[in-house]
Length: 488
Ligand SMILES: Cc1cc2nc3c(=O)[nH]c(=O)nc-3n(C[C@H](O)[C@H](O)[C@H](O)COP(=O)(O)OP(=O)(O)OC[C@H]3O[C@@H](n4cnc5c(N)ncnc54)[C@H](O)[C@@H]3O)c2cc1C
Image 1 (cartoon, rainbow, N blue to C red):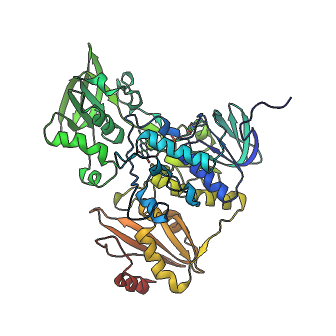
Image 2: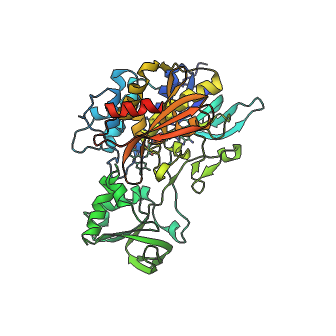
Image 3: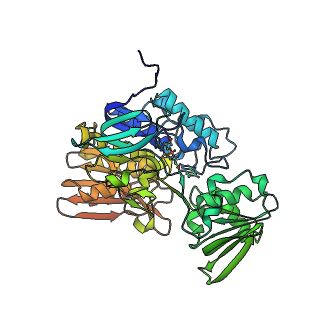
């Protein structure tokens, strides 16, 4: 009897299997398709969009998309001004999120983001076998990975897990198990007139504080480490952070305490939050009406640790190579938010943007090429730069390449001795620069100054040369040309 299941990718053998239909899975599938790599995409969801079908709970993103910007929509340089759209080579598939924005804010609403992602999935199109849940994993004797799913078994040479980092996680504080997590925060009007404590002082904690500010009587946030307001002020998360912080600074009733919470306890109808001040030591005992755990999320790794996938951040995030593989040659790759498991160099403590779309969309493109080359023998076509064009080409890249701007000190433009050029993880290139070659990256120091960094490998060591900052971040002038020419 013919099957009535018309969904794509029935169980079977595929060169590659991608799990997830959030932005990470969709971007990976697109990039693999561009390389001509056959693959199946599976998702537990019923529709594309991943986490953005539900969150952020207060329905407004943190990451900007500017419908009008110094660069034309659809141009490569425009990607830097549109942090939310997925990447495509074809003009009609580029910059899709701004198309759905009503321009009330510079950051899209959750539904606008969801629409942009769905438009990408439908127009490209990206085929996905929806309502198919990956449940277990093993490795066959021939080295192939086998994914057991709700629909049957999938065999593959490499698997890409774009499963997100959205499983609610609570830090091990006695009593925290009794209070709701960020994902369980109800409608703001429910908190009218109440005194609310939020455990945590990062994005999700400030999102709750911001959402409750017009309703709650008082909001108090607490976590051990102080907020670096000067860094936040220049970052895209300021939209959510600074409003409650402004209220804190003006004595408007909100507090952001540096506090190590020791326990949370029921006190009749109310809650007691007990801990020790950190920046200003001393006991703190608060009585509040509601407590939220905004202590983070974890990646749903299921049984992957038993296959050798190691983790960081208290088991929440997979530990990854610079090319986002769990161990070199394992064929177990990650895409999307989980790519934060490859930390990069963190020069001056500046982290990568791999947990957000504008960072991991580039990781996906590099990872797809790496996977195709290393597991399937498919070599991605590479551009070539003529020697006499090298200096202006590199200066142009550090001035406007969205990959380098989004992933500072993390992704680099590399050029080999014979002029072949590609975007690579800086940490991966430094491990193996391949003889005489050059890499450039955009970097930022502790004072927030942005400048180009040049790395020159000469077959032995690697030299690092930092070029000076420019007030308009335009490194294409004659002085820069002279300096870079001298270096090269
Ligand atoms: C509260 C919050 C707010 C955020 N706001 C922003 C923002 O404003 N801008 C931004 O760029 N980033 C934001 N992020 C980061 C965000 O997680 C990522 O940008 C993005 O959603 C991650 O995409 P992803 O594809 O990795 O995972 P997700 O979007 O989480 O998608 C995961 C996919 O994997 C599937 N899946 C999971 N487990 C299985 C399984 N066992 N079997 C089959 N399928 C499975 C899911 O069904 C889903 O389709 C936010 C994160 C959080 C938690």
